[in-house]
Length: 380
Image 1 (cartoon, rainbow, N blue to C red):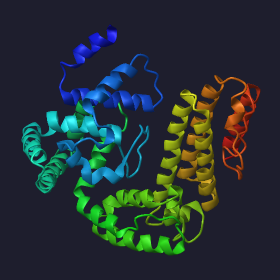
Image 2: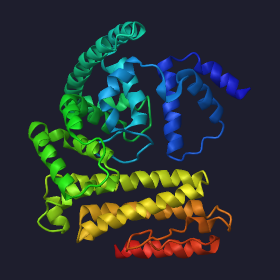
Image 3: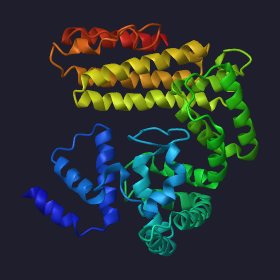
Image 4: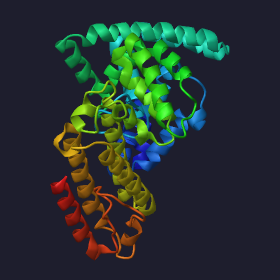
């Protein structure tokens, strides 16, 4: 009865507002926030707003965000994910564009697009979307140029989502829209898949990046994100920073043109940390074990690739991620039955990474394993 009353209230809201609410509920769930009683509401909202699932019919907003598709990531990152845009930010940003940034132009765009979509004219729809993308990008440049304008945008966006990354994603959307044609050309020049990122491939991609950087240096993180999306093993992106370095020392790696790729690999570890926390909260122990193994391999790769890492900003960030992982594991694994803990054992783990020594064999071993992790953090 309570859900029905809430649903009755939700039906009075606009479709955009309901979509924003659904996205926010999904974002919080992806963060591991407990939300008892919302499962039925989410199911009803999905049935109404996404009747055909991920392959639903095109909409004006889908056409608008289409150039950003390769940069969008699922989940709910709690950090500035370099070169990437959180999917959970798209709906609140779209609502903000419609209600606050360009309400009249957005309404005209929606009306025009509905006609193109209904009459199956995708080319006209793409052209209209491109024109509106340019208008939005220029409006964002003007609005976000001043401190007052940026603060107004932050305040308005806060009415649609509590996501800590939404304003950062708005800025990234502005940059990606400005560079959308250059990024499209760069994407076409990349191999469809890069199964092995050997020296020859690194040199080829570096040449493409050099040409791109001359035209649009501010959009390099987006280009690197496109490269990462084509790699079979995304952590290998850091080779774009380490291969051209004079030495493997962190200071020399940091001086290379694509040093930011190391930060992007640390983003990957941080994303896995969030995924791990959700898996533990939902008692998906086997998934958690696999995520731990992937984190361990990525951390080991970073440590092997860069010398004197501990004294660098990258090393400091990695220690912070380590601490967060240990805290999450301590909190969540202590709830597991004794017979479940051993599943988290990492088989074949090697090296000096944070997780290479973790081998839970029951609740009694948890505190010892956590202490071992903390000793490693102190040594890092």
